[in-house]
Length: 216
Image (cartoon, rainbow, N blue to C red; front, side, top):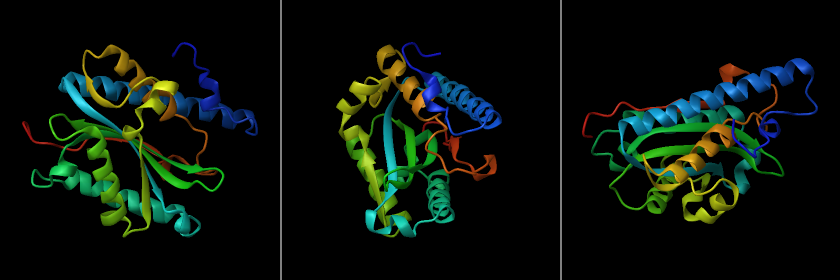
């Protein structure tokens, strides 16, 4: 779908048998289609967002102690807090929707959670919002065990790989939206770097759109 991108490298594992490769390919393209539909839906509803790319991790000293069920519990708590947020919870209430993906990094990277967040425009800058959400993960969700990477603070990293996909993105910012679609439709859809042996019930990827009151 995306020109000049070898999509096969984002779902193909040479060690897999033919059946597994077929299933991983189907999973990749199913995620891609759902993610791109979601991006389109979000920009039909609002003209602009602060788009955030936040990676939630654990401090290196604790990574070996964090099992998949533990990370899943942290994820569940964070998503519950986002869904239940009310206008007085200004930080979390600004989240209008997001795509998420749980991975296991190589070379000691440990379990980590990627989020592409559509945040209500008009609050403070995207870098500070992303930082505040990362600190919420550290302090309120993991009790100090967590860590995070704020990709909004390093936009040049996006420019080299996908083009600028984060920051203030408007409905008619075609170049930025093309880059955002690549992040959602390629990077967030990939099936590599996932926990082997996991199945669909493990919920390694998803889309969440909290209910927000009109004008909220």
